[in-house]
Image 1: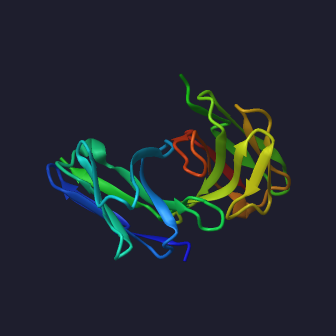
Image 2: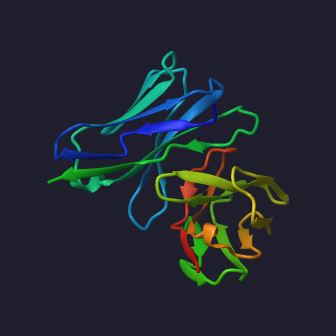
Length: 113
Length: 112
């Protein structure tokens, strides 16, 4: 119940295309869903986050779509660029008897020029 | 503005040796975290500190100890290193409880 399942493990997208990464969770006590971006040799950086009271949040080319009934959320990267090539992690946190943030396993995105 | 600073960046230890990983943040955050990152497993919380003087165990605390020296600094100690502790260790901080915002660039630790 504490897991966050992320897919795909890796993704190759052409420059200008849309990158889509999906995550699913079981525990309905989760109420905060962030996405992190990590470049090689660097720490993760908070990219965008959503709470379950909205179905979509957009920041620039990055959009989170949230489906509360399906317990799924996804990251869409519009007009993907080579500079977006990185590992992306979804996560979830909430009142789960510890409020700890649980991370997905990560998706390695490569954007071909 | 340095953000979250971790030292050292790389370290090789022999089994049974001890060492302390250092972390400092300059954003006046109350919450600080230690994570380990292993291939295919995302980030797993080792310890969390909500404020100076308080620490809580995370998912994988065995073999580790922590110390929240003051608001800025949060150290992670391996008392007797084991090969299973070979990993990349990240420190993080935030101004919100249990929601890490800023990460350091990690310590890459190999235990032989």
